[in-house]
Length: 444
Image (cartoon, rainbow, N blue to C red; front, top):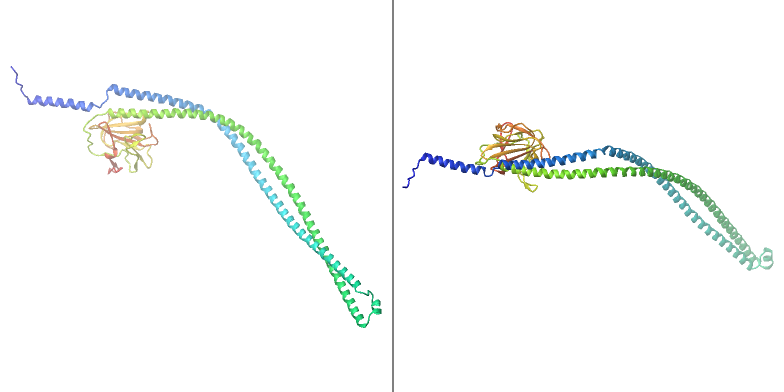
């Protein structure tokens, strides 16, 4: 006989509620990590931290070894600097001597130009003498021709002409004799004048030659002065060469030491690069741990979330975006007047789930607050934490101060919002806050 089921409303409701709770419980925990998984992530993080610590110890050892050369480097550099100062003084002295040599060269050039001008004058005067001598010779030739013509013309004496000519011819003769006498006197004056001109030119040439002699003497004196300057310069150059050789030897010693230090610095840089990679690995592991180690709920944010830095002069230095090949899971915010030590407040009431002190991996010192409904807020790179795990905080409660801990390049607050395991853009939820209690809708 089949038994007829009896439906009792009270039991049915209880059964349905139990199923809903079971399903809800499964849904809320489907993405949560087990304690073993949490521990595995933490173990990996601690192992990486240990590797970072070991690399940092190696860097410190290398830095310490390199610092042992600081005194030697400083001493060698001081010697080089002192020698370089001496070289600079020699260079200055050589430059002054070069100026003196250039000045003497210019004086020699000027005197030589004067002599050249005088040579041109002498040449012109010599040409005048040649012309005057030629003119004198031409005058003597002309005079000879006249005497010869007079001889060929007949009687050469007055008595002879009286005895052989009539009165008219005698008168003509007298006039001719007078004319010849005047011509002879004029030729004599011309010859004397030419001879005087030649004498005057000779005197002028002698005077010029005397000036040239004095100028040549001056050139000799200048050549001697120039030689003295050049010898003095060579002494300075030789002395400078001694200092330069000494400096080169010390520079060789310094180069050897610097090669050792540079090698140590290169090794240190390699270890630092390894640290940077491991810090990135810690950041990734902490992201994974944070993304799963949370509660799930409706995802509804009830009420306002105020700005985590309670100041009017804040700005966003890096927004919620892809950065360095991955999603930047929050915003970086700073103060124009200085961020380090600035108060950080809870953007909404909730319970502190994480208050991580110490190295803290990529986040450094950081706080996580659970606001219910699967909503978590993250506050990273803090210089100080003023709350503890399990503490209930109200909106606006100071939970720490901004800093530069962890994987950070300058003081700032990294603020993130996670809802049901997914990172959200904080600017979609935050409102601006002023000390007077005024909220300004975020527009970033």
